[in-house]
Image (cartoon, rainbow, N blue to C red; front, top):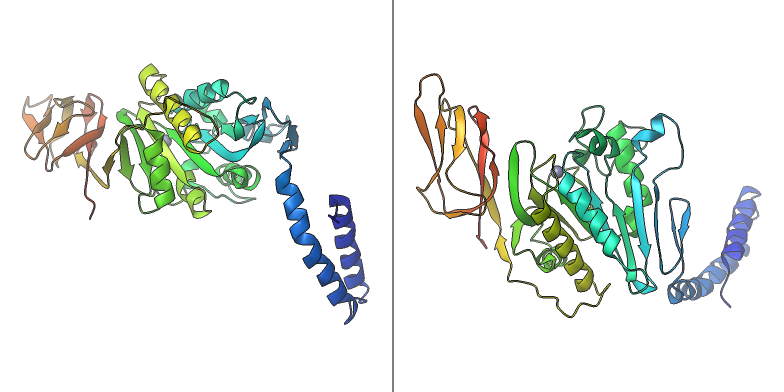
Length: 368
Ligand SMILES: [Zn+2]
């Protein structure tokens, strides 16, 4: 006979009372252990059989419904830093949970809109499993156009976070402790950083076969290898065993239709790959997988006004002219030459630059 949750709680309470009273002796302990062993498989079976409402952050999201709510209902000043929106679609039948995160860097708006549109399109009546979106984790940064948190920390170096740490650590911990354990896969949505643009691409730890497959089935065509920096959401989620990838596209501070549309299509592809949706037209293009990448930087003493010659997405070879830097005081021109063959997956926009400034991000295939 399966034990109900109430009976389980009563059993645990009884055990702890007996331990406290030192009656948990030679006879009683084995008897209770046998009860636990017999009951456990039955309880697990009864939990997975039924597809029920999702309990998340103190809310209940019924089967076949969608819900949008704040991460915490608290209205205090302190809570405003944690008051990110949460979008949940609980499907009408069992399936995996896909989590979308965006706005970890608050100025990277394309991803915020990818998460919103992908969620808006999800139909909980036909969905298998659950879609959870945290479209603006750094909610204050999204509102104010800031990559960083109010204390100037980078949230994407603070995961998995800890209780009682900085605001970054507190937010990271809240997300990890309350949401991440639900996720069977994670897509974290980003753009390039300030004054740079990224070709739409997926970043993934290619040494992990599950992550590699997820990245390829995003269907974007370009997959760039790398596990991400310590403390980044993607890396730390992967450490928990959650296959995690990043979609990077475009520039910060603006909404770019092309980059947003590709991201939404990518999320749709991932949902079809995870069998959360049925799509007959799913067509995954051959992925161009780049295991290696490197930045070409402004040479020492060759700072000035930067004007690119090559474009985002260009495939270049060693010796190709990538751009020109003009020293506005001496009118001297410096050529930026490609040191290797590869594809330009990220680049600086035209702007004044100084020595060492990262200009072109080149990626290439190197299976090792
Ligand atoms: Zn970012």
